[in-house]
Length: 555
Image (cartoon, rainbow, N blue to C red):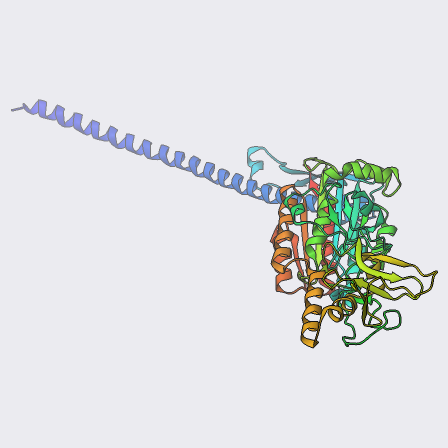
């Protein structure tokens, strides 16, 4: 037990400790409040700084986007205004006139380079609490448009369904296209070729002559259509040594008078050819235009195009791709030396992998593949069994199957004889006809009836059968629609594999035409156009021209 004195001392000590503890607690509470106030102020400052940073980024982004847009507009070679004025006007419309620090323009004959520097005061609300009174947003944009080497081929449908307003719309659209892509190209870096096609492609005499292994040369002026063999579609190249027959110029469509009696070929309209439905007609306008850079020349050919015939998209595309094939370079050298193409194009077509070159095909159709007929091989050129008397113009035909000695059938007499017909005079001469001579003077139906059916048939039924068989032997079908579709897609695949950009335009085309052009295009979204009227085909060509003249941000 503690003594009273001890208890008093202990109580006194406890009271002292309690008082000190209370004082310490009061002192710590004040320190925490002050510390909390300091933390609160720091949080407010950090929050304010974040707000200022957000405002800064919004201002900078708005300024950068405006500079990019205005710089691109100013760099476009198609606009003729002063580039600096274009930038200032564009930024003024965005309310940013006072935020332009400098505009620098560098121009040459085939390029324009525009650099714009901008600065915007973000007027910070909180940063000045930290001693930062100015927090400017800087932006810089540079845009350049430069015409690099561009090789373009327009593959244009001029079949019969293009007649009238559609052909007129095409001419407007394609004429503006060549003007747009060649504008400002004073260095001749852009070449444009044209491949008009219907059921065939008329190469023109210059290009046709370069294919030295062409057979069945019929000699008809300005008729230069070649039948491409199926093996040629196995490769993007078509060497000038490729063996290919020309398409015969013949009337294989119009009928004749199928009567079992003498009909003289020299005085009846049922005998002489009617070339109205010929697929490859004599023309100097619907021919392949070799690479050119003169706008007037190209527009002149476009505006002279004529519509007629069926549709063979595959032939148009094959020749279009051929004109971009680097293997054609030796030919282009020769053409340039002969002044058949501009001298500056002698080294073209450039290599597929050339980084400075774009190769482009614009493939357009308003239809779909139509299987068409042609004169069969063996009946296009060369000696025929038909003879002509030069004195009176009448014919006779030799048939080995008829009993000797009378093996010559004379149509205008309806009789057989032992020798070819002549007029009977001593001066008269008889000339064996070449098949190309026959097609220059007679239609197929007349030949099949007068020289074969009447000669070899014994009654109406046998004559009709012989006529049909002869007709189908001499005139054969070129290709089926499915085969033509497959050949087209083979050419398209080869082009795209070689980095050729393919733009496709289906102009009021039927379903299969749309499907074929869409599949051929480099992409459906960006390179295929379904033009349902004249305005849309013009818009399609405008868009393609704009895409070709590349604009790119360089900084």
